[in-house]
Image 1 (cartoon, rainbow, N blue to C red):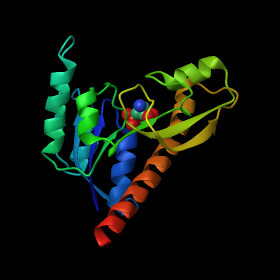
Image 2: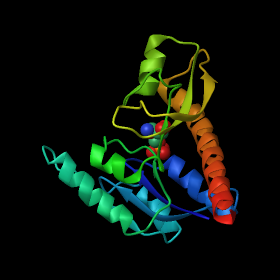
Image 3: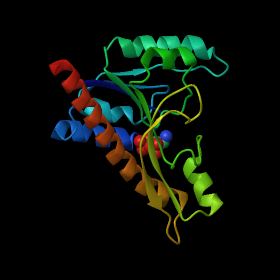
Image 4: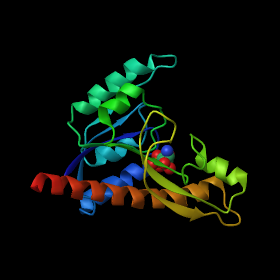
Length: 194
Ligand code: GRF
């Protein structure tokens, strides 16, 4: 079973879906901790499953590298095999990426490299495109520029708002992330058995 730490910054609906799947046994992983940069409602999903939580704030104007080290130390306490950014709205510093990548994933609500950044769904709707998507990447030092592990298209339909599109995208994000984690768990098992 992969030991997973998940970082969030918001409501954590994707986190909850991941936790439910782990509890149902459809994802071969154990979430050993959930962290956030602010004390957000999404942490309640971890508390629902009695999973340890932590908050590591980045003070406005604070030293991002020092914060990255503190955040990394909190995560390392749980000896994860994999770290997942799930709606985590902070850019992690290079030392953090070096510390955890390539077992450091992010889900993004667009078909990268289309619409990178923090407003991907709004940007797609405003661009008037007929389709966007969801992507799972390995985090690198760029903004949503890391190696793509999985992605799938999501169509926009007449009358769609940012919110209605984003909810459909999140469903695909959850499926893609589950598939990627299953694949990583299978590989870990294969490595351990050889
Ligand atoms: C997800 O679409 C994620 O890709 C993006 O923010 C959203 C988080 O949603 N970065 P939630 O907090 O899991 O509901």
